[in-house]
Length: 250
Ligand SMILES: *[C@@H]1O[C@H](CO)[C@@H](O)[C@H](O)[C@H]1NC(C)=O
Ligand SMILES: *[C@@H]1O[C@H](CO)[C@@H](O)[C@H](O)[C@H]1NC(C)=O
Picture 1: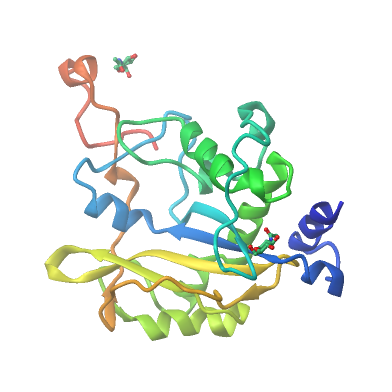
Picture 2: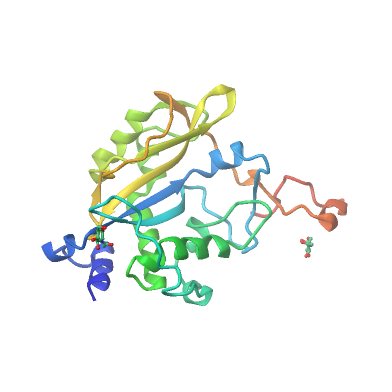
């Protein structure tokens, strides 16, 4: 019941009550920038087999429950509730915003299963609610729109890490943790943003932020749908009408 209430608050349908705010957990949402992923991964990135085009936006790459007393992830619940892919087939935005663009092309299911086993089963939420909660957070943060409104765009430009954090501090009153990766031209690039929220769904600065190496200014790499490769296998490689690396219908 408590977790059900927490979810409703999360979705902004209820006003938080002190009892819920005291549930002893908080959430961390990891959002990955696909432009950086495609650039930095040797295997490149691949178009999912779902037939649904992933959004040109940040994707959910993790949704973790933390113990607010110890700041450790709440784990060890993997046997509590086995992952059932049928429970999330109708979740809106799942294919677009929690897609797996890992190569070889895949349907994302193992990604969702891992998230559920690692953290979802410990969240106190039903499976469908867990995925919807993460996607609801993502859309409330709406990172790319917020950044673009401040002229921070995936255009190979260099942007201050502080400037990026301040966009969110001003917008949702919480700054993300910024994770960089090695990008082109020897520059660090924007790879992931981590946001935290209390059990009542209020965004907070992450209480025990991981430290990642970035430079003061980081590159924001473009993401184009053609970067997503079609699955390359014997039969497609031999087909003269398929250009490897070029996705025709997106
Ligand atoms: C958090 O950790 C403390 C100390 O180990 C434990 O007593 C408490 O039950 C944990 N809370 C949750 C929500 O897991
Ligand atoms: C190779 O690609 C074709 C066409 O997309 C597909 O039908 C076939 O199942 C794939 N083979 C393997 C081994 O993945």
